[in-house]
Length: 354
Length: 241
Image (cartoon, one colour):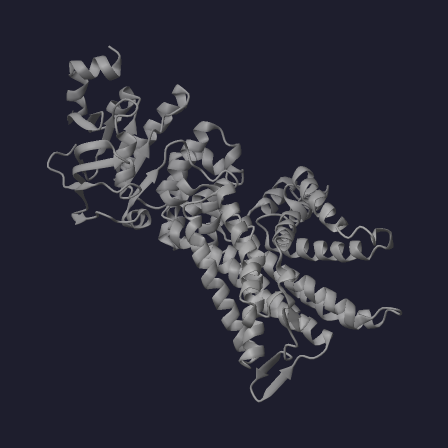
């Protein structure tokens, strides 16, 4: 029956996004006065943050469970991957898999208190987790490098059959981050439109109704936590290798607030929103700290971050994704001959995630 | 009630506590297959607690249950839904942010198979034509009556064997209450067994084959609806005669 038709998988945005990511390096090379390597390094960081934001978006935007501690999972991924490659000489890919699995397992465990806590209580519990991780790293300084961190990570490599790709330049790492981001974006889109995704959305909207529909709350809340921790863990592993080193200062609670701001700015409940929010915020952060006017006001970014959060919630409650949606609707509803406008609005208005 | 019909749900002497407060004292009831059974009683009598136990949300401290001849003690809420006990929670718990269409889709959630859920849709639209008109509307923007229709429609999407309704008439205009109860009879006529919790004893006794009256956590009366109507204590306490 027509009314139940599930949404068509749309390929165009992925192809377009991949093409843009592929074209950035050659285009940068063509601009005089720009050091492409450094810019690509900054863009790689934005892509890595976007991975965390997409995972966090599934947890907060789709499942309705707050986390103020995702920098903790990011740190777990980064430290696990760094320690395994540096101290045990494990190959990059294997270390990344272990880092992601460990992060997901801890995410699952943090999901257990979420079964009983909600709203502000859950926020405080996850905040505590986010605060504790860097402290644990410093405390266990003998093998984690303490507050000075870990440095001189070996270059990442990727075995492809007989061929092994070794990542050396900023451009190499840029392509690595872009490829992982594209894969994880597609995966996230598939999850949120799947049976599991419908359970997440049901829990977000009404736990009572979700349970009445036969949704297993224990299973899906812990799954959402594990999944978002998996994303943060993978991103952390990439981060450590792109920077060739890490220290506890990279994982403060402020970073968790950054992640939250990214998905609120982008629009809760939208994978594309999380992605664009992360890219825009990282760009803003870099632009602000480079403005000559504000050299002596290092914390201006934090003030702007707060302002963005407040303004977005007040004026764009659905974030960038909401803006994009209303532009699409207006475009579809523009006066034209022959076509029924109402039909088109209805057509496009479908699907807030299911 | 077709007398002698097989019981679909049997609740045997359950006791349930909230902390140390005893909420149900040895409550027993039977719901025959194909019938409508009503649970009546004032606020705090234990109606909703009984439903919470039946839907697996509250563990009884003693007693047992059977559904379709199988023991279902200790089953989780989602397992009970898959077995066919589907509840419409009190207060129209719809997914306000989602469209009517998406709400209905989620109703078939426990069945996994969207194709099977699809087959239920025409039946739901027969009961509630208004839902078809409002498919793309956000559920939170529906009127109270429409939200109740959606909540019932969504539960039917799971093709329940036992549909459990918790206070379906709560806060609705009399016209809408009539419509909801008309649909309850139709649902029963189509072969679905219904367990109904109601404060509106008039309407409940009209539609039910049998009713149980609860008071402070005990079943104080149970009989066929027609017989209960004649009882002096029921007339005075619940029907206002």
